[in-house]
Amino acid sequence: IRTGVHGVTAGKETMPAEETTVAEAFRAAGYRTALIGKWHLGEAWPNVPNAQGFENFIGMRNGHWNDYFDAPIERNGQPY
Image (tube, rainbow, N blue to C red; front, side, top):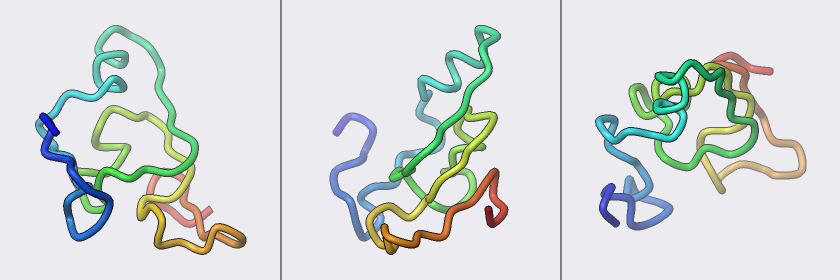
């Protein structure tokens, strides 16, 4: 609730870009970061994984709207 995320649809799932993510903290400390799976905190820049500290992202950005049995996924913003 503190971050403004209070649902899973209709924009309620979008985390403000100015929030510090764990990935941003780890990257600042020199770690490499990756997210593999489902991102459910926004699907437009700057609320995408690669803009929120994840060096690499393979998965889907639009949460539960995908077909989980043959889901289109991406790798760093490109179809994969």
